[in-house]
Image 1 (cartoon, rainbow, N blue to C red):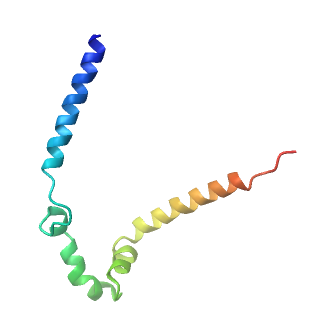
Image 2 (image 1 turned 45 degrees about the vertical axis):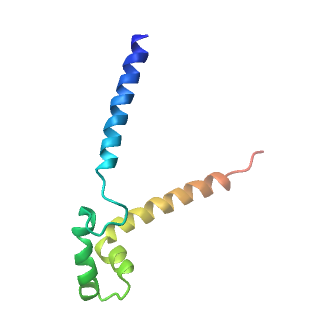
Image 3 (image 1 turned 135 degrees about the horizontal axis):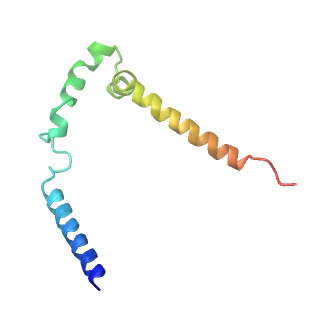
Length: 93
């Protein structure tokens, strides 16, 4: 009985904290949000000059975040290779 009451209290407190956190978030797509004021203006202004790539998304993914993109591609390749090895594995005798 006390365990269930304690679990309920923990869940209520966690729910209250999450609700307060969500109400403090900026509106979706708000250009004045902190996430949009840090590096996005710099990428928009300097991407072409620093990389020479006319497409801004390609410049960010290939030049600014190159190692991160390479890591993501490595994970995707490994996952695909694992799925193919399972699906095309040895046939049962």
